[in-house]
Structures are given as structure tokens and as C-alpha cells.
Amino acid sequence: MPQPIPTNTTSPTHTTPGQPAAATLPLHPDPASLPSKERILHAARRLFHEQGFHATGMSTILREADVNSGTLYHFFPGKSALLVGVLQLYTALLRPIIIDPVEARSADPVERIFILLENYRDGMAAQDFRMGCPIGNLALEVADDDPQAREWIARNFDGWTAAVREWLEQARPRFKPDADLDGLANFILTVMEGGLMQARALKSRAPIDHAIDQLRAYVNLLIIAPASHAPPPNPTHT
Amino acid sequence: MPQPIPTNTTSPTHTTPGQPAAATLPLHPDPASLPSKERILHAARRLFHEQGFHATGMSTILREADVNSGTLYHFFPGKSALLVGVLQLYTALLRPIIIDPVEARSADPVERIFILLENYRDGMAAQDFRMGCPIGNLALEVADDDPQAREWIARNFDGWTAAVREWLEQARPRFKPDADLDGLANFILTVMEGGLMQARALKSRAPIDHAIDQLRAYVNLLIIAPASHAPPPNPTHT
DNA sequence: CACCCCCTTGACTGATCGTTCAATTGCCTG
DNA sequence: CAGGCAATTGAACGATCAGTCAAGGGGGTG
Image (cartoon, rainbow over all chains, first blue to last red; front, side, top):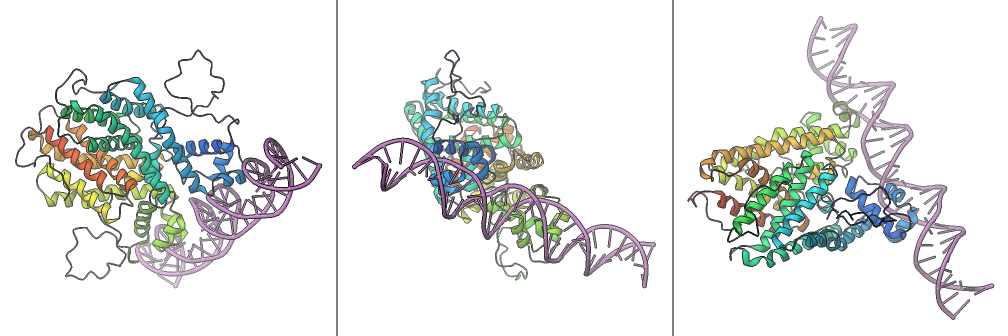
């Protein structure tokens, strides 16, 4: 899904070793040195995320990737093949860019879930609530007319919920025995996508904050004891 | 938001009086008799919902509305003005098409909420999970570059949550005193939009069913007594 | 050096995009 | 009947759309 806070304009080629590494992985190379195919993929990914699929013209991708049309069509037979390539890129990036940083921030599986959600929220806030989740955006824009793209969108969702489900399973002893953890993992994606959508429509973080609060209250109600691990249902609002 | 099951292909001009009125309001007149402006709005609304905003060309709208370009531009100075007109139409239709039928089906405010959600789910299933919520779709496709459209999208969301909030307030005595009913109303929209998105991506009703189940479990946990009004957290699955 | 094959170039295509506008119709008012 | 104005016609506009293709570059292998 979305990189928490991407879009570096200044080239990160010469990473001065003193800086705090920003918690966000670099990922946004672009600096002409990359092979054409990857430059195309990265430009398309960014533009599809910023403007949407139909609103992005091939000419814009060509310009941003600094590539001629023949080169692009040598690697991707058409615009929708390029879209599939972008979606494959997202699946490859899910673990290293989205999941791993969260796991590095906390060892508590339940807390990891909320770190994940807050990362999305903070990333969206940093972009003035203009972009949201790239997979969710594409899901609503192209899911119908492009079966192959739809399949890869579903695969991205599956990967995301699988990671959350894994965390939930690790915390299984904490949950009431009849808790439906698979359904809960799906529900967490549902809440996040719905929250990002509303945040974008209202250009405000309030909808996501509310959604996270409500989700935390719900999760706490599913947990056996109000253990010191998971704080009581107080607001998130970092 | 979305009409439960619209898209009549056979013209309903000569409504034979014997038929059962289908629970779905007519609304899809189209039959040449309507004034041009309304034919344009209805065609644009349907096409934006079916194909998305950018994927719908003006020429298609003109053909479906059976109108010449000059006529369209006489009423709407451009494509985005037409979009705003469609969004205004949705706000006007919210009560009569979405809310009122739900209130007619049950007097119990909490049950009304789940009837509302199930209506969306059933409407989407009837379209093979191809379309989803028209407002949500537009929220992710055009919210950024069109401030006026974004404002009307927010207004639609507000109207929707206001209706849900009203129901929740009616049921206030049933809820634990510290329950955040405003936040819950927002949360319900969040869950519905997220659920519709996943249902569309997976072309399956499972995500919405799970989401509704989880939401029902959550609401039941917020209610004081497991009263006979609201059934215990058993699955929805009509 | 000769050959091959992957990559790249960039001009060009026809189709479609959203939009314009002068001319005409049809209805209402005076 | 005259005048006026909203509604409508439909050809045409330049721009951009996704996509094509013949030609050439460049590095590796024989």
C-alpha cells in the first residue's frame, strides 16, 4: 500500500551518513541511473497514486521517467500491463516498506496493528490528505474493467491482511477464545480503507482518528483482561 | 449514495399497474419525455457510477441522454460542473431513496442501521460487485483536483452520517452512558465504505458480511443489556 | 571483424478528448 | 404579429489520448 511519506524531490543519492534516516525508507531513486524499466515503474506508480490511473497520460509517464514511448512499449505492451507491473511492485514492496518498519518499532503484536494504522494516517497527513492508499484508489477506479489488475489488487489486500492476521494469531492467548481473528484482520483493513477515504473527502485527520479510536475500543473489548500490555480505551491522538 | 438496485434496461414507461413495485423506487426514468437537463443528470450519474468520472466521455453522456453538446453546455459549463450537479442530485436523493425505505422497514433505530448496510450489500451483490458506492468512488477519484466536487462529496457523507447519528441518538438509552455515538456514526460509514471497497476488489460478499458481523458485535458490546431488541452477536448472512 | 539481439529513438497514426459557437427553433409575452 | 430569450442543433476546433514502427545504437559472443 502507500509508502508512509514518499515523494522526495531532492535526490537522495548521496545519503549523508549523519542524518536520522527518517524512519521512512528511501525508495524514490529516479536519478537517471536506474534501468529504464524501473524508472518507468516508479514514475507510473507515483503518478497513478497522485492523479489516478485514467487521469495519468502515457506522455506524462514518459516525461517523468525520461524515456521514449518505444522503450516503454518494449517492456509493457500497454497501459494496463504497466498498471499490473505497478501492482506487482506494490506486492513486492509490502513487507520491506510497510510491514518491516512497523515490526521494528514494537514487539507487541497488538500494538503493531495500531502503529501500522497510525503510519498510514501520518503519511496521509504529511500529504495534506490528498492521496490515500494507492491500492484502495485503484480498487475503486479500475477493478471492474481490468480483471488482471483486479486480481493483483486482491493479492495486495490479501498480503496486507495476512500480516495483520499473523500479528493477531501471535496475540491469540490475549483474546477471548471465541474471537474471530480472521474476520478481525479483514475488518482492520476495512476500517483503514474507509477511514482513509473519509479523511480524503473531508481533508481532515478526524475521520481516521475516530476510526482508530473506535477500533481500539473494539479490540480492547475482545481482549480478556485489561492487561497492562494494551492500554485502556483512551483516545489515540499521538 | 448508491441506489440499491438501479439500472433498468427495459423502459418503465408504461408501468403495468399490477406489478409489485419492487421495493426499489423507480428512479431511472430516462424515457425521452424528461426535460433535457434531467436526462443529462441521470445519464451522467449512471455512467459516472458504472465507469468512473475520467473513464466517462462527454460523447457517451450525450448519446445516452440523447442530447447535443450545445444543450449540455447550455446547462453545465463543463464536465466538472456536471459532476457537481450529479453530486447535488445525490444529496437530494439521499433521504427519499436511501433513508426513507430503511425507516419504512423497521422502527427499531439500531436495526435500521443494519438494514441500511445490508441494503448496500444486497444492491452491490445484485450488480455482481461491480459498482459500489458512487460517492465513495468519486471521493477517491476526483477529491483532490476539484475542490467544489470534494465539498459536495463531504456534504453527502455528512448527510449519511447525520441520518445514522439520528438513529443512534434515538437509541441512546440503550447504550452505555460513555459511548461516543457521534464517533460511532462516522465509524459506521467508515466500515461500510471499506467493506464495499474490499467486496469490489475481491468480487465477493464475504468482506462486507464480515464487516457487518464485526460491526454488530461491536455495537452489541456497547449496548447495556443483551436486550431482546438486538439479537446477540450471531452472524448476519440474510 | 561479423553477427545477433536487446534496447532505444522519435516521428507519426487515427481516435477520442472536452469544448466552442453561429445559426435556428419554439415558446412566451407584449 | 413582433420581439425576445431560453433551448437546441451539429459541425468543427485544437489538444491530447494510447499506441505503432522502421531505423539505429551498443555490447557481447563467435
